[in-house]
Image (cartoon, rainbow, N blue to C red):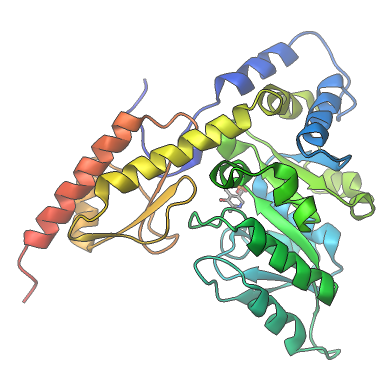
Length: 352
Ligand SMILES: *Cc1c(COP(=O)(O)O)cnc(C)c1O
């Protein structure tokens, strides 16, 4: 049944053993529904322990819902949300943030290396202050970015400082938050609330779970009625224990971090394996579990003929993502094929 691994997306992978085992343990007998069960309480407590703070914790089925509902909670319909032009909320959520906020406008800044900058935030937030323009209220950053760059602690702090000064909330899309922690080697607390982040969406799916994202509010006032918002949006799981249990299986024992570190290491391995090859270019610094490769169209076609699957609609090159179970030898096969197709394309006569 099983096919050779593909690195088109980190959500091609299955469920990691720690998450699977916790789900199996939760699958015994009956338990109260809608989050009133012991697993949900344990998962929320595991987040509070990991983040060293009594935050409010909610669970949603996917990242689009988590981001959209979190942003909706932070603003009114006449407010606006500042994000980078590469942000998942802008490019890959089908207008859900605007939909769930009843129309809050996304104000898009050109990304610098995939990132938002304090300067861009200030410019967007102060450009229009009149009644005719939606009032800036939230900034959202993706950590790591959609192209695999990690905001340093200082970069997050600098963005938070501008937010505080201008009266903006700071939201972090952490679909791969674990990969950022693994890269920086810093604690989840340091990278979020201690740096000035108000709300974090912590991705479970790309960290080895079947499904599920956690929404963490570090200021409990911002979480008011968020449970109703989740329910109305169809994001309140009745058998919540199965969304919650995997977190219990992954947070307390460091699996969340080990899974991410493995993905990051495989990305480094691919990058090392193709670095300096004529005819291809690694497009962005490899800091998380992504490698983006620029290749000529014939080389991309040749790579597909060799059986590789990948997307080119993000970042403008071939994207390779490494999950918790990425096989390093398979990554080496990809590196060899990338070198081969780049060489073939480089040897081809230019079209007349
Ligand atoms: C995958 C991802 C999400 C969540 O996507 P869903 O498919 O809705 O779970 C959010 N943000 C980023 C940056 C992502 O890569």
